[in-house]
Image (tube, rainbow, N blue to C red; front, side):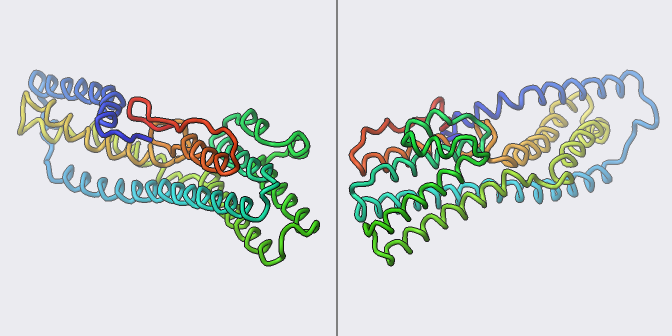
Length: 291
């Protein structure tokens, strides 16, 4: 996730320079053809292009709103994971000071969740935080995060049966675990349910077609300076399309995705320090990007 505006501007320029050069080159071709080999069909009215551009902006706005809602919902759900992890740690510290393995398992859970959402291998982080017995029980499970959360619930039940936790306190802990499961389900729903093809593919196609015909509507008025005006307007449409595409998948490995690694590190620091274990340093932005 980009945290520095200057770094964000630099990323925008790097990601857009290819589109700008292609737009400018095409506009130059149109101007040369119009000025040196003019044909009557090249005299196009501007009104249809203005109407098409207005409709396209509305369409892009709807898609971008849907993409941002997905991105923001993912951030909200991750916020609930952070808060419930801290609540679980507090419950364990006050009710079971002799069971730090459950707190470490909660840290392993968020790392497993990060790996499942992003499609990355987080087994090293999971294994270093779990006991050998617990690590063996979840081995081979398809959904590692759900497996760890399930085993945490089993561990809590064992303490209840041993009389270490009162039934009323158990109900509160179980509510926290249920909220974590609900948050995980919401995150997995976002990952497994992409935007409809009409939103994910059609806007990019329409923007490219519009940029191809745009200079034909401007060359009569702007003449030789058409490449500058047409490229600027075309870039605005390309940028709108790219914004929606960047936010569509909040778990992708891009600078625009959710900073899951940083959020997991924050949880790890908070929970390990609560039980007196050594904790790593927080992650800092690298060139304005928080991993």
